[in-house]
Length: 337
Ligand code: DGJ
Image 1 (cartoon, rainbow, N blue to C red):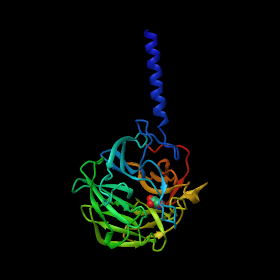
Image 2 (cartoon, rainbow, N blue to C red):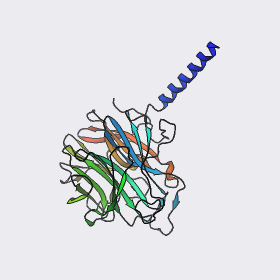
Image 3 (cartoon, helix red, strand yellow):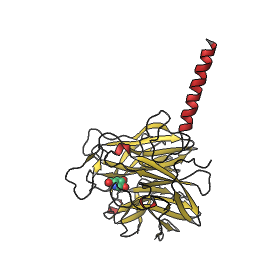
Image 4 (cartoon, rainbow, N blue to C red):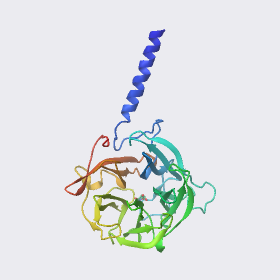
């Protein structure tokens, strides 16, 4: 009897060990599971680091994908908007599902966040003065003709977030977007504007809830989207993609001395096979690994346009070599500890 218990104990211990090992690496493009064994559903996302914990926010893409009838100029594939998810992790490898951070509206079809609308590319920053967590996101109609930026707020990182509304910052269109909080506490909203032709970067109000009148047109007429802004050694870097719907294309990075300064479009940060199509993916965020100099994670989405729920995550190390950001493909890897 004792022997049987010992054997059972050994078996379950090795199962747990193997299970933990399976998750103990980042495997770009494979199905990633949370610690409960469910596939992680957090697309077009971003990560907030707060109180020694990483919080990953992303679009919940669930259920059937269909093509919006009537939109013929591009492949407008979509799923019902299911809101924004939140996962937490201490090591960037084991992710705990924290629930739905922002729930969609199921009843009011005029609401920005009704399930028939588009809720994309959520990013969250923490405001040290108001002690609130602030989420911005791209809000649109199913034909993407609304081009608004929405804001939500919460007392806790994981939510629930309360939706406050949306607007076109300074009367300008806003689609693919990201946020960047600088070391001086100033925060910026970066978004594809002017029918995706030109990107804008706008200083947010002190509480991060509103755009200010201070904004700059950057990458003028360059037709860029999927912005991801980060800082290294006092310089600012912005990775973007071209606008080709759900299909991948070549990423480029731009560099500036200040978020509202002159942005110089430079090169493709990706190198090696499939670098010209960003390893079949599109940028969404660049995450500095906490406490590690010159160690970033390039986060991208490998969209599956006809089955959006099955879109995959491509996370790769980004390091500076000769003062240039460089991203290389890895089948599996672990972030620096
Ligand atoms: C590309 C954008 O980057 C995505 O977030 C999404 O809006 C698709 N276009 C829609 O085609």
